[in-house]
Image (cartoon, rainbow, N blue to C red):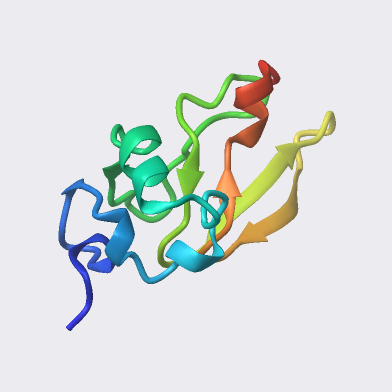
Length: 103
């Protein structure tokens, strides 16, 4: 049985200790005590396909860890075209630039 936090139908507070990608993500090295203290405000969200997490040039509102599916990072070019710069897979993080005040 899959833990709730990796079930795309379950929305709400994450149970990080039971997460399938826990050992591969940014905070994997945290102890249980650190995890419980630092990561309490983490929510589990289901983002519909083709939704934007944040827009180019804007601050990311949150830090995102991909648990399932793919996230396409793209840039808008001056000529109106778009270029895919990276695909994020489960365990990858999006929005880290916001931690240092960048857009």
